[in-house]
Length: 122
Image (cartoon, rainbow, N blue to C red; front, side, top):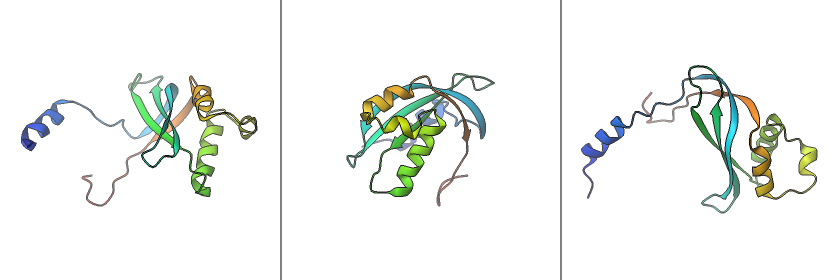
C-alpha cells in the first residue's frame, strides 16, 4: 500500500517544472528506435535547448510511424522534413534504426506550448 501524501511530497521536492511556453533552438541529443505498447515503430528523441536561459534543458518527443493513419504519417514526414530529412531520402528504404541515427545532431526550432485536457489543473 502507498502513502500517497508521502509520495506527493517527494514529487513536490523533485523540482521539475515544464519548459516555459515559447520558441527554442534545439539539437537532437538522443534518438532511439523503439516500439510502442501497441507494436508500432517509433523514434524517441530528446531535444536539447542550445541557447538562452533554458540552455541544456531537454524536451522529449516520440515520432510514431502509423501507416494506418494518413494524417499521422503525414505529420511524421513533415516533422522529418523540418529536421532536414526529405521525402527523397526515405525513397532509399532506410530502416527505422537508420532514420533514428540520421536524426542525431539535427537542429531545428520548436515551439513549446501548454495543453490542458478536461480535469487537468491549469
